[in-house]
Amino acid sequence: MSGADLSAEGDLSAQKLTAKYSPMDGVTIKKFQATTSGKIVAETAFDKIMDGVKMDLNFEGTSAGAAKKTELKINYKGDGFESNTKVNVLSTIGGNPAITQALAFNYNNFWLGTQGTFDASKGLSKYDFGANYSESDFASSLKATPKGENWDLSASYWQKVNSDVQVAGVVNMKAVGSEQASTDLTIGTKYALDKTNTIATKIGLDAAKGKEVPLSFGYSTKITDAIAMDAAASVNALNFGGQGGKFGASFTVSL
Image (cartoon, rainbow, N blue to C red):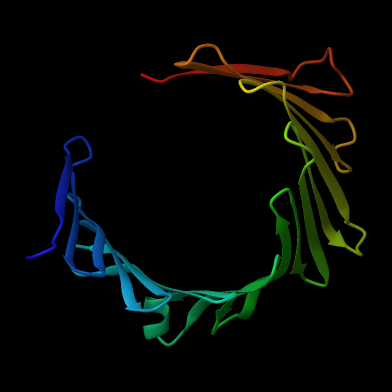
């Protein structure tokens, strides 16, 4: 077929065969996998249904014809608006619709969004709200998630102070307004010594873990044009000499 792209790979140890096939423009079977145990997995993408719309249909079942999981994803991206829909096809066909919906709206540098899951047997659940503001050298976000009668809140901040220095922070507040409320804060910095050497630090403060204040250090360098090294260490800032400290290093070689 003109324009078709067919490739296959076999894994003897796992006894499976995987194929990828593009039968026509805008339709791609991203994955078709069959195993000797009878498991069938198929992932199909539809990219040219209409402007801004993409769909994915994912199936998992057996060679005997039993369907274990069928999921339909519909993504739409327009001017200042994005929608992501996920449908549990098997539940919906069985009379118990299960749909997860995410919506996001953009105005200049602001994004406002929400997502939630609707199940006919449970109603609306697992929903949250979020806001994000970003520029080339600054970004911040806020997310609110209801948990029973209380809320979980999280906020993040990042800023590029100058060409060499970056700072960031994340705060999480759980069960706000309840006796079980807790807060944890993480602050990090990154400093470029020069074009090939960078150091980074991070410290965490968690009200629920009063005896631990994790402190991390990282260092990245390019030893030669072909060899790079990354090293990191972490300790408890309240007990430098105690057990639990960690150190690691990795090397990357480009040939």
